[in-house]
Amino acid sequence: MDRPRGAPAETLLVALYLVSGALCFAGAVRPMHPEAPVGLLWALGCVGVIGGAALALLRRNLPTWALDGALGLLSVLIGVLAWRSVTAVGIVGLGPAMIAVGLYAAHVLPLAAARAHAAVLVVAASIGAAAAAPAGFAPAWLALVVTVVALTEAQGRLARRLREAADTDPLTGVANRRAWEAETSRHLARALRVGEPLSIAILDLDDFKKVNDRDGHGAGDALLRDLTAGWSDRLRHADLLGRYGGDEFVLCLPSTDQQGAHELLERLEASHEFRWSVGLATVGPSDTLATVLARADEDLYLRKRAGRTAG
Image (cartoon, rainbow, N blue to C red; front, side):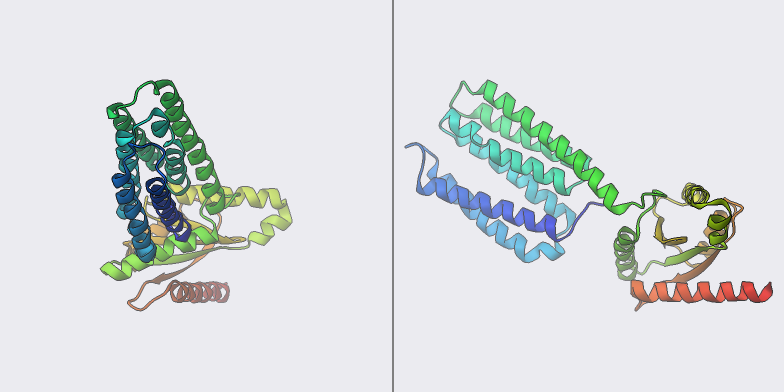
């Protein structure tokens, strides 16, 4: 599954690092205990500020593995702080940092990835806490761990529902226009980078207005659901179907040349008796999403015109 990335995700991670570094500096300047690990706090403060600055510079080109690594590093450093804490209060006081990491993972990552990060966080912090000198904090620590896990799960489920609602056409369940364009742009960038074929099709239903006028909008909605369900059953895992508006749909076919696209479209045509027209374009070396869609739209217009002339 692709991860929900973009400026908010990277910016929040930068803020997480910078705030963590600032808090470590504050703890080093005003230690809460005479034996507090001041040297470690200074070092972690530098890691937070320098890491945050580096992430800010690289955030537009930050790969997924780097985001996972940066988040995992925070979990490990929390474990180190727990290990070097000299009081039980200092150990349990790491709770807000743990909750922040868990909520961040749940907010920006798919639920499975967020759960994995929460597990790494809890294990790393618990190992550090168990190795620390203070004792007597087990009940409070258990409550903290349960809180982190529960909040990560709740936020992850909520974020997944919100992403699905934002990316999905509510009537048909396929990608909406915004989500389709965003995902297709990523496929297009990859195809141009590695030289793989990519085809894009526009599917326009013939005489759909007559269905609404004759049988009502309920019948039209049911037809759209039936058509998209039949198409989806015959598409490959990597193909992306989207609703572009009204009775017009778009299809992104990665690693597919024109011949392969025609073969797949023939399978889609056999899925339902209702007729529809298609415009097809295959990506060229200097294409953008707008130019490919324009060619597909022109092809659709020519096919519809030829159909009317033939009739």
